[in-house]
Image (tube, rainbow, N blue to C red; front, side, top):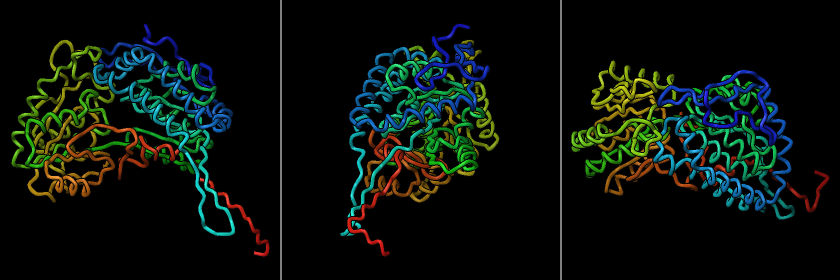
Length: 490
């Protein structure tokens, strides 16, 4: 088997080392089903070795001046940028995401996030509180020490870097578990971190969730865990951690996100916005995808017609090609899960307008393909309205009144993102206030803005990322009370 990456070892304590186990996970190109590399299927012992190395490294890292940490993180960002093309091609082949938008998003976001949090590091400050006049009350922030990041399969490199930048800037050492189905870019990341970060500050242990993921959740020394993925796995992490000790866990989980369209909108522009909001460049495999389209009855038919025209024109194929719009989904197991959701939608009586299975043509005989699929007349009680598919499947529903639209938007257990489209600022703000979602766009979608907190409500998660809140979340508060006039008599 020819591998598209040159190394296949873990990064522990600043060294590329073999796993203590002898099992391997084979990475498969989702467009062809051809093997493209292997990663170690790490063990609980590997996790503990990484923890021990991080435990030795973080005190010195935390003692460095914030500007010194910032300088190191900026050099790390520069090194990643220099290998951007190599990382991009590996990531495309390993995930199935299309190359054109990935070039603008994944590595650039990683680099920008490192630089952003490097810039925030000197601003990580304490305070004095005038609680009394005769004493001095000081509040400081200290890093947790060793923290873990469990990354998802849709953007593995970006989430392994961008979502560890705050932890590193705050003075923590990090243990990263990449996803088991798309870990090859982590092999490049291991080389970069080994060369540009102090030994033990950044560690990578690859493997499956049952082994490495569970070992991280259950390790008593890892007191802070961050996870992006499904609600089921998020709850499993909470459950396993709670059986061992008390941990600070942040979760960015699924979404069944609504895009609410008022009747004053242009149907053609709404169709364009809905396409963009579905994140079809990553096959809809995005927790923030606007997979529920709520259209006012006055423009419903026109929007649906315009949307179908655009979806039908999408070009599917090799995600390494610059002219391709949609690639394959990440794995055979995930494809099969998406197809089960489609079957449930058909059974419920949702009106399928397009797609529903493997695309036609010899080019799609191999690979994990699901044609972009659109259902109309989907009602809130239906499976497709309620369940996250995490794939290229859109549910369209119709509303008449403001209250009905708000109720439909809030009718699922999720609350990650939402979008409101209207020219009436009163309607826009009133609807945004009614929707129980953590991140809302008005006349926009899918954009993230460094410095603006991102995260979900309800089943969609706990905690916020991408802003100052994320930096603070990797610190613990300590209060120091200096008794200037000690009263030893009580």
